[in-house]
Image 1: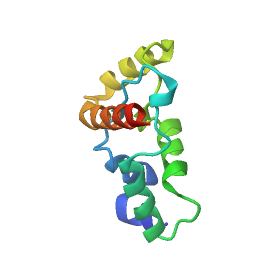
Image 2: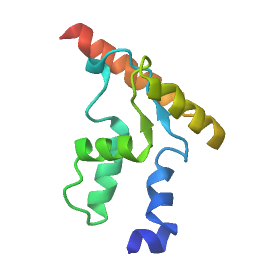
Image 3: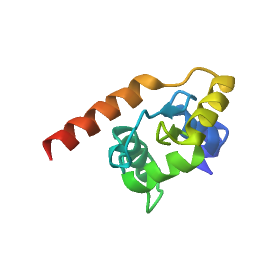
Image 4: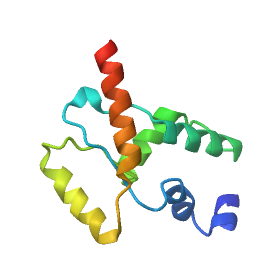
Length: 112
């Protein structure tokens, strides 16, 4: 209720973390899709600070995928372009963060 009082709705609160624009991943292989992200860690910490429970970074990242805050469909998936088209109708997508995430995953994969 405090989040709704402060932001107007949980929707506005959660989307504010991604500037109201979905993050689009550019993943080619399933192993590149992360289970959490720096953004999910920030959201998780804020939710915990506000009294939410069972909202670790992995759970939050899964929520981000389901709610459309991040598009982690593989580039070869038929839904990838459909989701991009839907996003473009709402506004510009947030590719910078997705590209940073992709580089981190690729570096990690190359090392291990």
